[in-house]
Image 1 (spheres, rainbow, N blue to C red):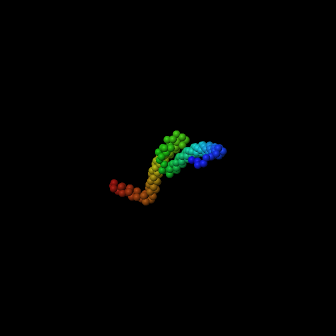
Image 2 (cartoon, rainbow, N blue to C red):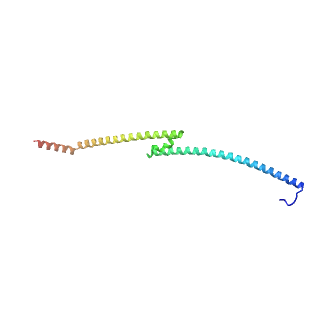
Image 3 (cartoon, helix red, strand yellow):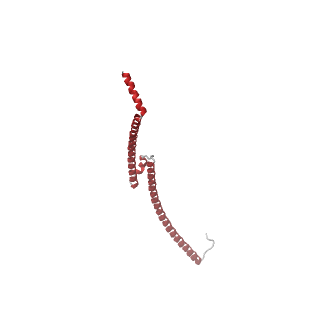
Amino acid sequence: MIDKQLSPDELIEQNESLQKEIEELKNEQEDLEIMLDTVTEHSTDLENEIYEKNQIMLKYLEQVKLVTEAAAVESESFTIDSLDGVAAREDELGQLARVFQNMAKQVEIRETKLRQQVQELKIEIDRSKQAKQVAEIVQTDSFKNLKQKLKRLKDSRKK
C-alpha cells in the first residue's frame, strides 16, 4: 500500500508513466514475437536443409559402398548378396546395385568357365609335354640300344 496520498497531478503523472511503460512492454513483446517467428522460420529452413544434406550424404555413402564392393570383386572377396539391402531400393542407387550384382554374377560365371578352360589346357599341355618327352627318349641312342637288346632277348627265347 501507498503510505502517502498522491495528488491528482501526481496520479496523472504516474498513470502516464505506467501507460508509457505498458506501451514499451507491448512494443518489446511484438519485437520478441517477430524474433520468435523469424527464429522458428529459420530453424525450420535449417532442419529442411540438414535433412536434404543428410539424404545426399546417405546416397553418397551408398555409392561408397558400391565402390567398396567393386574393389571386393576385384580382390575376389565380394559376395553378391552383400548388396541386397541397396538393391531393394526403388531409386537410381537401387538400380545401380542390381546392375552391379548382375555384372558380378556374370563375371563369376565367366571366371568359372575360364578356370575350367585353363585346367583343360593345362592337362592338354601336360599330355603334349609327356608325348614330346617320350618321343625324345625313344629317339636317344641308349633307348634304341635297349630296344635292340630287348628284341634279341625275345628272339633268343623263341628259339
